[in-house]
Image (spheres, rainbow, N blue to C red):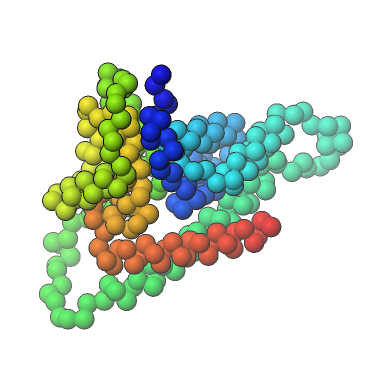
Length: 275
């Protein structure tokens, strides 16, 4: 009998703690951005469905979902239920009834504000590193070509990209086979070897036709682990465009550490506000 995404050997071998990357509010903000909806008028039924779909995907990928994700799922379902209920006679007589989504919107806006502030502070801390200490010939303005700055890729965008990988790989390759026997550590070494040679590699290029489900998932988990260890950078050159991986420089690793520290402080502030 074929497992969902893993063989029995892989199922308990490795688990990624999702909260080391993103939290439930990050997922909601991602879905709001993805669906291009007004944060003040969240289509709660659609967002709840997509949120629960993501939770199922994360479970299938063996991601260790923190309790706060489950709490948020319950909160969304409660809001959805309240919005489906007809107004009571007492509420009909009131001038204005509070939107069931109001508290969630407040939390999202508060969290977004602290997250943006932490990113801004991190950028300011890095300004000194951008100063040139030696003379250099400034280029003429007409020689410069506008280039879009690569943007860091969020965890949930990586999960979406992996979903597309699974969709495009031939169903014929998804058959029962003997486990490949490759560990996360082995695959990390292989990915790093490729990056040392190629310097920059597309996300899709690491998932080739003929790979088993287990190897596809091991590869994805290896990418997550490399991100967590700050050994690689994952970027997009345009919105919803191709995802690229490259080895992180020492400076980028330090930047990631400072950004994570600032992000943790922001989450701590948000938790205090909601307590």
